[in-house]
Image 1 (cartoon, helix red, strand yellow):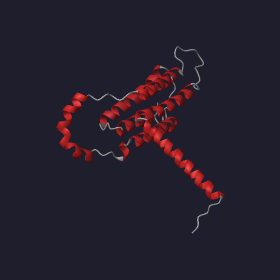
Image 2: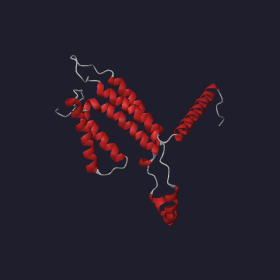
Image 3: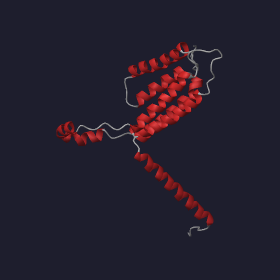
Image 4: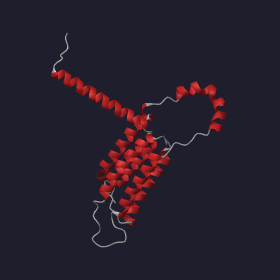
Length: 201
């Protein structure tokens, strides 16, 4: 069967080839960055979005030493600085002397360990980047609906567990300290409004 070589077919192949080239270029560009650098870009964009929201917080009607938008602005700019620092952070140099000492000792176990340490789908850097971005988006979406405490508890616990910290009790304690601690510090101590959500306080 003879293929259609008309204008519609030519346009289709042109669009397809253009899309494939752009997709390949995008994938090649991502491969040049370390996972930490990609995560830092996501955190930087989230920080900018957070700062924009912080500047929309109305101030108190009566003058106070600490206004309602002070801490969110400080937190937003701190996240920007930390995300930039994470982007330019270099990998730790490997101690060549200690590496050479252990290389001979572990050489006979290399093949066996290689089989056991194959990366699963969830351990791949690309998967971790996507999961982190989705988790941040879900955090933003649920913050007003479920409340700061519950959203922060689930977010901190889920991300620490996802990145390999399997101590459930320790994760719960850390998530609770961050969630409840920041909530009461900001609302009771600094008078900053945070959405209570489903919790009765």
